[in-house]
Structure formats: structure tokens, C-alpha cells
Length: 572
Image (cartoon, rainbow, N blue to C red; front, side, top):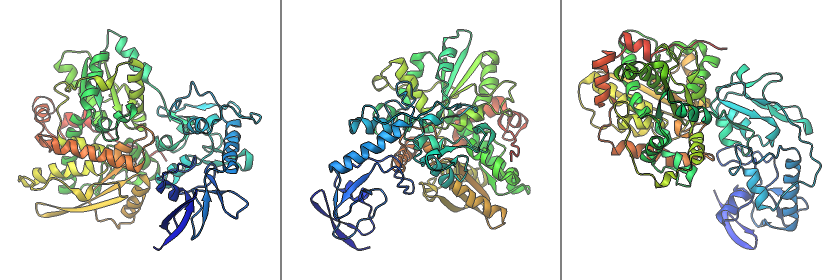
């Protein structure tokens, strides 16, 4: 593509033809305010906060959606542009619930930041905002419509990225709002609780159900034995809540914090990620060798499970019966761990720290109680953990690195990569190959399955069979593969589907903003943890081996089926 010469604020610059004004100003380190714009979404051009002056034009132009042309002269900081931006913010504030102090996004709100930057303390326009009912009807996501600024980011995430369509524009003109179908709450529609809407919302109109106080209450109850598990994605993202670079590995400091505030044991979800690979790998081989339903889909992502229950119930037989690592962990703690330590399971509280809002809903599913008790009692997101640490006043940056407790704190590098899209498949292939062939895999890095591309595939020689595998990144990409499976056009044996773009590192409970650039840094850190691990294959985990010898006896055995497997039902 050819380049064009343009002028921005008196500075001459050459940019690619078709570049937007917003993109061009970034090359000069000029920061134009935006609200509806998101770097990973299609351009909307609806909020008009990013308006600029163009020479010889009467009207201002939105920088995010106006492409440059040869000879264009742009001024970004004229009085006219500044006043227009302030007017737009005045109009937004007039219809916005301004209870900032009590807002979940206080201090991390794009609207609040813009008002500070543009020196707006209050709106001069008559306030028309009305208190609207808060929808907290489900375990995962809360909607506060009175704080919605109608930027449309959540709609793009729900429709274009996830292909779910749970929320959309209702009514027109000044009455337009973003909502669920009329008269319906989130728990009454096919919302998968992925939380991708939360991650792109610039304000506090959508957020997760806050369960921090439940954890404090459990820790204060001396009759309870409280254990915590930490998902792999947490250790490469929590640092962002405290000013660390994305991808900073803070595993040991998290463990240290949990020890400080009084958890009885600090365990690692990676342990049951290794266990999941053993169970899921053997289930795949059983299907392969006994005419079972293929292709087999992974079942670690609860948002994906809800999606298939609602939109593709005819493919439920293809979904692995394995519980997710979170739920396997809870079931083992209230059976194996309780028995081993002579603790009454009713006195155990299992807390999960997850990057995923859908995990809150998964924990309370009626199927998740095969030990006789609810597998997992409380789920906190990464953001909630960050808030809990701030509440404690403990300076996490200054804490020493500490190790997970035994026995459920030992894991391999294969478990760590569960946090990235493609990681579950890669971990499974490392084990399936060696279980089938009895030979050591010469190269355990399946690089073609890594990265945030929409769909990836590979063929792996396992014994005499060419095993065709695929990885779908996000639900809209999953839909493409699911349609192919339905139509008999997909020649795959095993398919990994992660609900959230990027996998768990891009989960709905992760630090905001989680752009693709930030996700890439988190993913790199996940694979760094893998490459630095002494053990990198799930079947080599010595504690998992001991678990089978002492308790489970064998993969897919009677006890494994009872505690570690489940079933899913159509919800359409």
C-alpha cells in the first residue's frame, strides 16, 4: 500500500494510505481521547469524544473512523475540538449514575479518567439519570444499567467476538439502551457468563458478583478448614493490579499472601490440571479404540460448556465427561484430602482463584457435588484477589517467594500451559503420545497450536494413527468448527475449545484492560513457566501417580468416574 504525506499539529508525517487519524496521531505520541474505541474491536465512531479539526472543513471529524488522505492538515487541540469533547462528556454525565466512590471501577474507569484529564468536575446540563434495577440474578455477572454510557463495546464482545448475542440495543434515539431481551434477566437467557463484556466496558456498568467477604468470613471462622487453589493464569496477570508489567510471574508472592492471611493450605489448580490430562487423555483413547463419539471436545472451560448446552445440544455427546481442574480439585479435597487428614468434609471450605467469571456459575452447578458436598465453595476472580490484597494492607510486592503446600501443590509445566489457548491440547498430546507408544516424545513443544489466532490445527502421528486436532480460540471461532462437525466436514479426532479469546489468560475476571498485546505477554510468561519446569508432562507428576495408587486406583475407574467426571444437559 502506498504512503501519503499528511500534517498533524504542524508536524509533517508519512503514513500508509487508509490509516485513520487516530492511528496516525499515535505515531506522533499524540493522545486523542476515546471511549467507544477499543484496539481489538471494529470501529464504531459513536461516542464522538475523539473529534479533531480538519483544515477547510466546517464540522469536526471523529479520529477513530476517519481515514487520512494526501495533504490533509489535522489539528487535534483546537478550542473547538476541546469544547466539543467536553460537551460530549457533559451529555454522558447527565445520563450517568455518578456514584463514583462506591463504584467497582473507581480509580480504573475510562470515563472518570477523561473527566479528570479534560478538567470536568460536574456536568452543566440537567441530570436525567434514573436509578434502574441492578440485575444480580446470576452467580457471575452484575449489570447496572444506570452506569451504562452506550458505547457498544459490550455488544461487540458478545455478538462479534463470542457469537452469543445475550445483550443488544433496545429502542432508538434518546431512549436507546443496551439491555437483555425485554423483561428478561441474565439468568433467563443464554448468557454463558464469560465476562468478555466486563473486560471491554469502560465504566462500571457490568462487573462480577463480589464474593470477597465470603472468604474473609470463612477465614474468621475457627471451625472451618479453609484451603485455596490458584489457576495457572493468575500467576502471570495478578501483578498488573499492582503496577507490574503484564506477564510478570508472581506465583510465590501469591502463596506468601495466602499464608499471611490465614489459609490452612495453599494448593495449586495445576495439580488437577495434570490429573485432567490423565483422565481426559484416557477418555480420548477409550473413544478412539472403542468406537466412541468423535471428535471429542475438551470440557475445561465452563463458558464453552454453557455455550454448547444452549446452542449445540446435539453435540453434547462429543464433550468430554471430565470435570474442569477447578471442580476436580474441590472433589478431591472433600474426599481424598479430607480422608487423608481426618477432617470432616463439611468443615472444609474450598476457595478458588480463577481468571474466569463463568467459574462462579460452574461452582454452583447442581452436578458438582459428587463427594456428597459442593465441590468448590467460593470463587474469586483475579480482580477480586487484587482487591482482597489491597483490603489486607499487605504489600504483596515486598513478600518473600513461598512454595505451595503438599500434596496438591505439585504440578508440571504441562499444567501451567492450561492458561493459554492451545495449552490443554498441547498438554494432552504430550501424554497421549507416550501412553500409546511407550516412547518418549522427541519434541514436546507443539508450537503450531500456540498463539491467539482464531483456529489452529495439527496432525500428530500417534503409533500407527494420524491424530487430527484443532484449537478454537473464543466462541465465535468455536461456532465455525462446530458447524463443520455438524455438517460432517470436520476430519478431527480431538478439539480444544476455550471460551475466552487467548484462553484463560484472557478470562472475564482478569485485570482490565486486557488487550491482545497484553494477552500475548501473559501467554509468553505461561510458556516460560513450562520451559523452566523440571517436569513437563502430566503423567510424570509423582503426586498424581501416588493419588492413583492410594485412592483412585486407575484412570476412568469407578472412583474416578464418580468424583472427576460429570454430564451436561441441553438448556435450549
